[in-house]
Image (tube, rainbow, N blue to C red; front, side, top):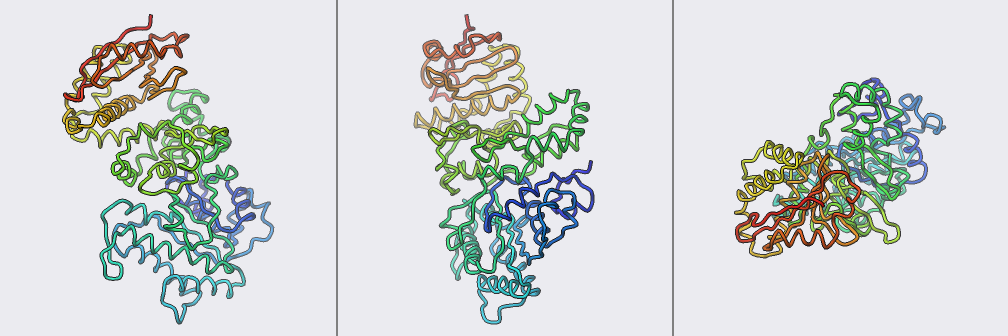
Length: 531
């Protein structure tokens, strides 16, 4: 089987015999029932391939679709004038780059359809081209915009500037103005448009980008199109059945174990209340091709804009992950730099893990092991940037916990915190001290990714600070600031935090840890086994 890794051209995939997971029934449904759409999906999730597929469909290239679902659905195969604007691959952190990209495409269109002899303004020129295409071809125009938001993501929350009317202006504001003008054209040219699709990672505020634009139908959370990008479990098992068997044989696993590991590693994305599982297509294709379970998607790019937003808003990932949010906070709310949560979700670093229709709330968390381990490692690398600890330190900690050697774990933790205590001593506010300790411990335990880690786990009596489940041991942690370890152990007992593990045959340890805001490290540590 030939895997189209890095290939975003539908034409090349079909002509050169690469595997194609058939999305054309969904595409036919999309083009038959609406006109102007917006779709948000994480990077490398197949948005560009979707755009390419639509482009070939609207160009009437029936031969490329033979044998696919749409081959029997579409009866007419008309050819439309297609305008494809692609912001993929561009670097828009320099003044003028966005204008060059748009003008380059516009000049190509004008050479084909004719230039406006009067107007020089960008929007008027584009509107004229769309009108000319409609009148000359006899069919309305199709507009496909790929990664519409990249010019904003490249500069959001940065100090990059450019010149606007001779005045130095933030590049982020310049780009917003250019894109707002570009998309407002679609309203002026509405009668000349057959179909419009904008794809991107994020949906920015309507007033900043989409004002003046006929509001597109947002299908990002529409359950009918959950699998428009990505790979569903049914598609995985039907298209790649033999390849899954080969992957399992290569790694000494049964077919069932292989599917379970693929699911744990690359599945878990949910884009609507229906909770349909969607696998990351980039990671799945790379894994099946290489016969190796690696973090393929996360390794292809660092979410620098998210790191900036989290740092500048003083957000810690442990205070966002695993929490419930109303729909207005991330589904209906458009991403801004002041509130990073929608952007974290839309970028694919969080996903919907459950939905409560009674209160219309969603629980968000990391979608899978690949994203969790990659994101935590990235955050830890930044947070502990001045430390000399290597992965060997975390290997030693893992071994200590796996073997039930809590005394060794105590020494390792105390030593680690002693070396980063200088960060703390600048934090005079007690709440900030507590947040720092919680975040430090969260990152440490999350990096021990072999095991199940639950931070602030809910019980009927309260919220456990942390639970770490190993094959033979379960550790229930309670943290205190400027207190005693005994007080922490007392809370574990009084709140009945051990009760959820009453029938668990593993050895249960209750661990109380008290931190000192003066020294910035552990000042008391005690533990007891479950009796």
